[in-house]
Structures are given as C-alpha cells and as structure tokens.
Image 1 (tube, rainbow, N blue to C red):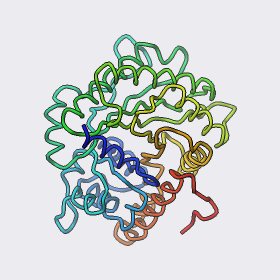
Image 2 (image 1 turned 180 degrees about the vertical axis):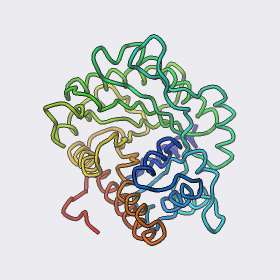
Image 3 (image 1 turned 90 degrees about the horizontal axis):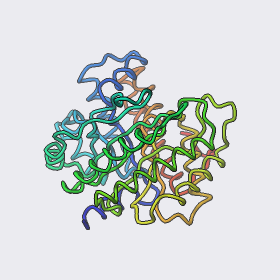
Image 4 (image 1 turned 90 degrees about the vertical axis):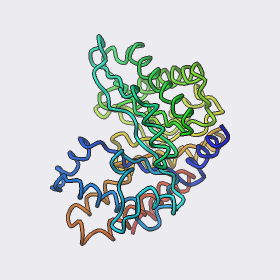
Length: 338
C-alpha cells in the first residue's frame, strides 16, 4: 500500500489541488450548447487539449480527473494527454462510475451504478496511466430526504468501488455530493453531511479500505440555494471544518471539495477561510473543482476557439494558481486579477 499512500499524499500536496475535466458527454454537450459550440469529438479534444496543455497549471495542480474519452486522446502533436500531464508532474485520474439512476422504492433519491465490470476497467485504466479514480454519489436534501437507505446504498457502492481501486493499485477518490438544491438551512446541511460522512467512513473500514490511500471529495456545509438565510464565507468554513473534526478519521489521506454549483469566487473564498482559520486539521484540505476553475476559460475559448486559445489557457492557469493559494490559506482577492 506504500505506493497508494505516496500517490494520495501527492494529490493533496501543499498549495495544490485537482482539476476535474471528467464531464460525461451529456454534461459536456449542455455546456457546449449553452455557449454555441458544436458538440463534436474534435471540439471536445481541442478544448481538453487547452486544459491539459496549459502552461503553468502545474503550479496549482497536483492532479486532473479525465473522462474515458480524454484518457485515450492526444494533442495536435500526437502526444497522449496522459503523457503531457505526467511531464508536468500532474497525476492523471479517471472517472469510473456510470452515473446515477433512481433508487428503487426511494422516491427522490438516486444511486450510482457502474460496479459491474469495474475490476476489468480499472486494470485497463491503470495500464493507460491512471493513478487515481473518482466515483460520484448523489445525496439529495428535501422533505424526508435523504433516507437511511439512500445514504447506505450510495456509501456501500463507494466503499466497494474503493476496495476495487486499491486492489488495482489506484487511489480511490470517494465523492458523496450533498446537493445544494433546495431551501435547507446551514444546520440541516451540516446534519446531512455528518451523517453521510459517518456512514461512508464506517463502510470504508468495513470493506478493509486503507484510509491512508484514500481521498474524500465532497461538498462543503452550505445552505441550499433557495434558503432565505445564506451563510458567510467564515460561517461555511467553520461549520465544514467542525463537522470534519467530528466524524472524519485522522488517518484519511486528505479532503478535497467539489464546487457543487458555487461560483468561482465563493468556492475559492470558502476554501481559503478553512485553511486560514483552521491550521490544526489532521488532513490537508484542498480542491477538486470543475466549473469553479474551468468556466472562465471555457467561456472565452467558446467565443473564438482558435483566436482565444492562448488567452484562455492563461486564465485557466491563473484560476489554478489562485485556488492553490486558497489551499494554503494565502489567497488575497485584491491580487486576483490578470
């Protein structure tokens, strides 16, 4: 397990985090459609080349989560994206779940599929150069939700996935996303987060998953988007860390956040406050943002994919660097400009 420990530690190296570019075809199409970009394989490759090849991203990134298609693609010079990342010292990762479907007999809840055949897929991904993997589970908050069954079903799948990853020599990133859709309060979010994380940690141990070779990717403790009372950056930071300290074992390799619908500014500020105010945490706390880092670059690239290519890469590298500072509690919004 020593290799897994080393990879997991590198994923949350000081001042660095992970960029998620693992959007499924469905999600990627929605983003392209919204910006007027034709959804073709070549456009997907061109955009993901922009992301993987961007000069300087390694200053703020330790890893990058890829989609199956991206893991197999190459840049204009014929160099595989995986090799490009490795040359920058960035760990290639891979999304391995098959998406969420309605959970039987549990209205309003979902469960993630993809365990069938996963052992064989992980073996291939390891051969293609993947060092870590990601599996996302969806936890909805609403009237009577989540149920104990909904939480258990998703955490059980996460634990089984994590065991298969470690068997294959790949670090598992376990991602229970507690959704921010709804009008739930900060306190309700905290309650659901703590319950979900507790069940997940118990099941990881039950299935003999080595926590020192595991990364938790999850949501911040944050009110629902429709909640009349929103929380400050400090309140979110303090509530999130308090819950981590209450239920997350110290031996876990690290924690990274998804942006989960937050804008780029808020996701950076929340992360910065956590690392600035809470330096006594037993695990590194960093980021694994997708839209929170990509969106400004995507919007500029979409206006003129060839003409804006270089400038979009500069914006991407800047956002990576800013979040890298936030992962150390050193972000200063007055300096956040190009």
